[in-house]
Figure 1: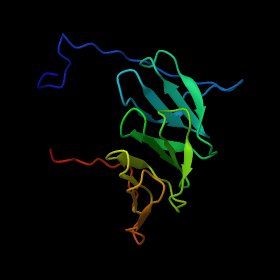
Figure 2: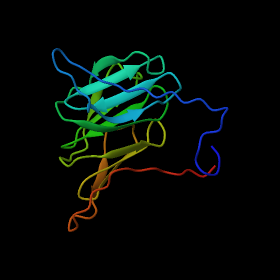
Figure 3: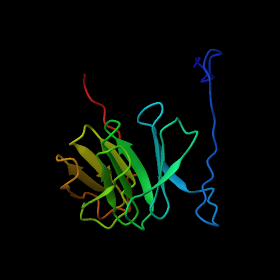
Length: 165
């Protein structure tokens, strides 16, 4: 991009609009979180158990089940296989096979976990409403943390960690 934030002429841009339907339903607002851990592999999480997976850069999407009826709002992957999704009312789901199987991970919270970041395949952090900050060092099997700002009407919506090289 140039200094004004405009795309250079040699860059290509491919916009895609995703409309998802289940049965007779059609959802334009289904996606809450989207991540492409690689150029071809894409994961979208959203309303009522929805996980969408693409293995071809978004040309085709397949539905997966997360095993929860809660809305998932964020997803992050450490690599092409290990990912965590979080959502409303505290669900945490994890995969170690890239997308097919999503296991229930217990974070012992019922607040919305609006952000998650995987440092690697074992270390991850989740943040959410009420200033909740959770951490795992075993790939999501156990989570520790607390509501750091219980007295404030504070919600944490995302987390990004910058790692020193």
